[in-house]
Length: 245
Image (cartoon, rainbow, N blue to C red):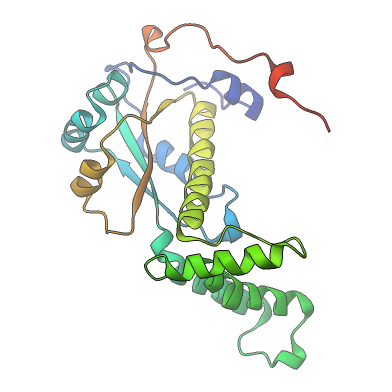
């Protein structure tokens, strides 16, 4: 294994690799370490509404590959990581944050003795998070949307309060974790490919995921064969996408 790369080196090294070397296995513990770094990714309200399924079984990989339409990145993968959003766990994750607040500030502090920082944190996870995430058949979300739209005529306000909005929030932050993972893998000299093309329902059923779980992306892992990188990297010229204001 090469010496671990810097962040800039890892970003430059990372490519979406479609064919992995069958004779070069990767170490499960290193992939797991990269997933631990994925869990350090920034995420909305520190809710961490994600799970990472690390597939090391060749039998399971062989079953998942057809659900990824037998693309080379899936067929030749040494391991797979499936990033899953768990918006349905918002209550548990909010409580976990409140317990962390108890650990830092002390539990059951009278409101009169709480610092402004503690009051803000407890109010955020005790009231604002339930307001944003709670819904029933889309009805509460629609009512919240009407309310914030009206208030928004008079002052700036957070507007992503519908069920569909919060689903997007969960997927955005899970994507940040996936990017952390792929850069961490590149730093180790390992390769990855995020695969958009997959039958996520069949993969979900294979893994026995609960109803509220959604697959964000499937990332194949291994060590590249030279032909596994399909040509030179192409990017739109930076001056076309960079806008200084």
